[in-house]
Structure formats: C-alpha cells, structure tokens
Length: 416
Ligand SMILES: *Cc1c(COP(=O)(O)O)cnc(C)c1O
Image (cartoon, rainbow, N blue to C red; front, side):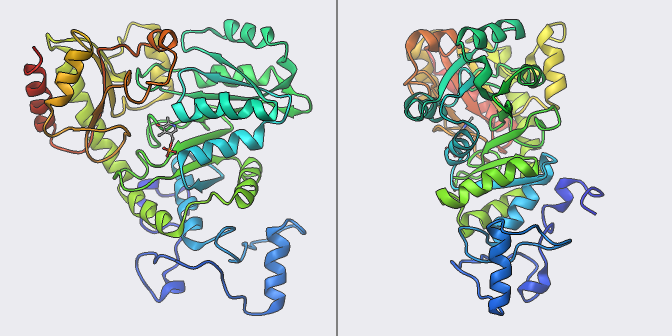
C-alpha cells in the first residue's frame, strides 16, 4: 500500500493503528519513559532484538521497551518522514545539530578526512573545526564554483585521499542559493575508498526542504534536515532528522540510542501534526516567494536577487537546477543598493515580515546575514561567498502574497 498513495495523502494516517489507542483518530502523545512487558519471555525477546543478539523473525517488529530506544510517536513520525525522500528509514533527533553531529561521529574515524562544501551552516562549521580535530579527523573545504577536477585536486593535496570518509554538502547554499551538484559529489565519492569502507555522501537539504528535492534518488547515501525549519514549519520547536538506506540508518540509530539525543514524544507529536500540512505549506510559500522575488527583481533600489526561480534559462546553472529541484523554493536573498545602513533601514521598516533568524516557517522572516547568521565567518571568506553588507535574507511564509509585496515595497520606500 505504501507506494500506491502519494506522501501527502498518507501524512494523516500512515503507520498509526487507531485500534491500539482506544480508536482515537489521531495518535495520542505517549508521554511515558518505559513500557510494560506482558511476560518476562516477551521482555527477553524484545531485548535480544534491540541489542542485535539475534536476527529478526519474518514480519517481526521491535517491541516497545524504553523511550530512549523506541516510542510510538517517534516510530510513526519516522515512518511518515521517510516517505518524502523515499528513504528506507529515518531517525529524528532533538535538533538539527544533533542529527548532523551524530552522522559526523558515526561515519568518521580518527585519521579520516572529511570533504565539505563551503559555506556550511555555522553550527556545522564549528563542529567540523573545533571538535573533529580533537578526535583526529581533518577537514578540507571546496566551493560551489569548483569543478570535479579541482575538487579531486583539493583532496589529493591533503595527502589523505585514501582516508576520505565522508563528503558533506549543503545545497542550495545559505544565504546565496548557490547550487552544488549532488551527482558530481557521488562520482567523486565512488572514486575514493576509506581504507576498506566506502566514502559516503551526506546532503544537508534543510534550505530547500523535503518535497522539492530528493538527494537520495540522485545517489546520496544520507540526507539530514534541521526539522526546526520547513518540516516543523511553525517556529515552535527544535528538531532534526537523518534519512537513508537501512544499513546506514541502523548505525545512526544505534549511536543515537547511546548518545540519547532522540526527539521527545511531545516534539515528535508536534512534528506529526506539522507533516500533515508540509506540502500545502511549502507550495504556498514557494508561490509567494516567486511573486516577491519578481517584485524585488524589477525594483530600482535592488541591485541583485538570489533566487532559484530567477536563474537564466540560457545559463549552465539552469540545467543543474532543473535536474536537482522541482521548485525554486521559499528562500530569497537580495543586495539592496547601498550598504549596512540601507539594509538595516529596510529591515527596521518591515511591518508584516518579522526580523528574526531561522527559516521555513509559516511566518515570513528577514535578517542580515553579515551581522547575524554569518557574523562568525572570517571576513574575506564571507565576502567571497557573497555575504556582503548590503545582503538581506528573507524566508517567505504563507501570508497573502500582495500583503508581503506591499510590506517589502513600503520598507524599500523608507530606505533613503
Ligand atoms: C538551522 C540549520 C541547522 C541546524 O539545525 P538546528 O535545528 O537549529 O539544530 C543545520 N543546517 C542548516 C542548513 C540549518 O538551516
């Protein structure tokens, strides 16, 4: 049945059996730490499976033991979330950062090399540079404009090409919407081996969100999300997710059991509610964003708009955009004519769009990357990635498009 209906049709019911919850049409919150076994024999069987002491019998599911290992809210959420990316399985975490750091810890060993795309999310960048060296993992960056040949040279120049454990990419890049070719990264990974293990490719798909892009179908081994953004979508929770093939997900879930960074039953329940409207929210957000981007693009006080929907059809980039995404998404950044002063005047004069970081939510948010989300990046590197004093980032929500345009228009008018 799983493959017959589209994900949006299954978000209200998939994986939940009302019979097990007094017929409740909605999955209740299983706010419990532990679960009662019917017999000691049953408890023994559950533990054997949970700790890998024997193989699963046919059709056997892991029984409920303890909420750090499993919980109905967590399991139903993970089953439903997997549908969007056609993943075998997913693991949901208490934050995007805990999902990302768990992947980096599981797939990198002392002596390994990590290749990552720059710019990457500030928290990820910090973990790569301030924590991974302590466990003997080196990292090297490449940039969106680098060709496959250039990236292979970057790897060779480290002298550790035979220890490439993981390629970690973030695309489209925040805040400039630059695209990195996932299939190219998979080709690079195939040419490398980490001692005896394969080199894996992990894509942070937070910025585009699920629905519009399927990195696993393009060959990636793992996808990570900050579920705080489009998946949660209401700016009322922090969560993260990892999706992929079952053998890799078993490794991720086993480490999660011992780090204890799984999402709580309550947050999992909120996410179940969010998933019901994921597609309809994202469709509206993207339609709104296309209108706002077009408005900005013709405005005399706007120098340049970075939005996937505005990529020139004649450019080489257009082909990559079409291969990798089937919507331009809901994230826009633009250079206002002027510098920090003009950018701040614009932000301070918005009335409907709120001044805050984060993204992907029902409400529109605007911020100034250079002095906010990207303030810790070394100035030269920041300039190189296009995060200049006149750059403003806007995450578009589900409001009325004409109201959003009126708000932007009014704020631009107040820039003098
Ligand atoms: C927000 C974000 C993260 C971190 O997620 P948290 O839920 O805040 O821990 C990671 N990657 C990207 C691209 C993000 O936008």
